Image 1 (cartoon, one colour):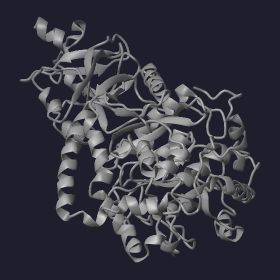
Image 2 (cartoon, rainbow, N blue to C red):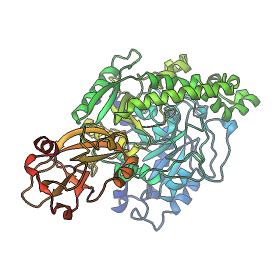
Image 3 (cartoon, rainbow, N blue to C red):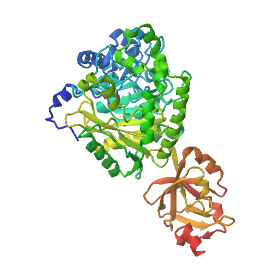
Image 4 (tube, rainbow, N blue to C red):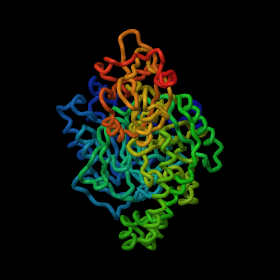
Amino acid sequence: MNLPMNHPHQEGIRMTEHPFDLRLDRLSRAYIAGELTPRTLIVRLRKQALALDPAFHLFIHVLSEAELEPYLAALDGRSPAELPLYGVPFAIKDNIDLAGVPTTAACPAFAYTPERSATLVERLVALGAVPLGKANLDQFATGLNGTRSPYGACRNSVHPDYPAGGSSAGSALAVALGVASFALGTDTAGSGRVPAALNNLVGLKATRGLLSTAGVVPACRTLDCTTFFTATAAEASRLLALTAGLDARDDYSRANPQWNDAGAFGTPRPGVRFGVPRQLEFGGCPESPALFAATVERLKALGGEAVEIDFAPFLEAARLLYEGPWVAERYSVAGALIERDPDAVLPVIRDVLAKAPDISAVDAFRAQYRLQALKAEADRVLAGLEVVLTPAYPRPVTLAELQADPVGANSVLGAYTNFMNLLDYAAVAVPAGFMANGVPWGVTVFGRAFTDQWLLGLADAMQRAHSLPLAGARPFDAPSPAGLARNDRARVVVCGAHLDGLPLNWQLRVRGGRLVRATHTAPHYRLYALAGGPPQRPGLQRVPAGGAAIAVEVWELPASELGSFLTGIPAPLGLGNVELEDGHWETGFICEGHAIDGAKDITERGGWRNHIRHR
């Protein structure tokens, strides 16, 4: 639902309205038009951040004007035409290094001053972005609520009785309160998604290793992801495209495949199969079930097909994160400090990590074996789907609940997030409505690793369909993306022996192929029975006139298998572009022109199956 203008917490929204429109495209246009300069903007945002901090505790360190000067001076004589992120202000979670500024991980006794920035920060600065400050967080990134910090508890950007979410609390607030265009967070158990949902933002938890974690204080080194908070999915897509890639400084870094590049962001095709968990719990919340059901219906209205799925393996994997040996991985970072000076670490963090020293190597291996089994089960669930839809959190918890039960209330927020990195999936948190009291509510869309840009395309379509006001009560208004979204699956149009049940169909199935639909080409093709065989093959040719619609099938197979499929296709056949009856173009079988000599024109049959039946 849209928050009514006379809502009792509308006053809170007015308080957080943005004096500047900091969206990437709007800011760039303002700079080009000469309406604004980076120096003017950043100095004013710095003052705004300092004014907001006493109420929200969003920053641990706001850069001084002297600390900002080198970044601003580097932009002198440059322009948005040269630097994609020219003059764009951003916030950095304070477990991510910024050269010359202390990194605390919200623990003063742990603090150190790095000589070099994190790789991702370096890349952003090189693109023209300007760091405004180091954002507050749950200590050692252990928590999902944003209250576990000696630098102050982070309250929600809209409602003062609720938390900002964590552990990337300050990062989310910096964007939601209008002092940063985007912010960097981290995500091990949901820290890049829960704060996004609680503050009406998009939270991108990209595929593990896609965004460098070099220069990040680890929570769980094997699971950690660096994240983006933005107002829109389109902005997250742009930032990901600019910064994803291998990093020699990060041993867990992974290359981004071409199917997940900037061109993969677009409008999803109709017919998206999205999983809806059979096991959904909302913690007794009277509003969350209806908000989730409304989101399901919106996805259906976009052309999606809802598929009920067994969510048990995902939920069991989630329990492993804190009930299993990964707690010991967290302890490897903070443990020495706890043993040396227990009072330097917050009691709730000590309690969470207390069992870590007793976890054995045997426990660790047993948990890995169980996780691998759950991963196999979960992957099978995803095999026939493009995406899974879940609530971002079952229900919001209040600051009072967190004070009364710090661990239990925190766990509620992570019910649908904790499994994601353990199972190696990509995920995006998307705004999906407001509670009656004004608290933002959101969902998560997740899918296979390296489908990040496709997921962002779906998130963008969802934002357009819902058209919720953005953080700061700005209306959602943005141009539609060009082109169709792509993921890790390639589509192939077949018209002959590769049709379902025919002699060469096995070549698709052995590569993990799945029949998407039977359809027809646009009425611009002729079909021929080619000489030779067995098996006999047709030739499909586009003609300028006298064509007809030919029966075909659209199959989908892993993009990594398309190359081996192509090399097995004998001349005179090959793969090219085929126009379908709905106007979309897909990769499909075509025939070289010379092969038509001596071939029989069978266009009147309307397709290969009819030809076989009449032969």
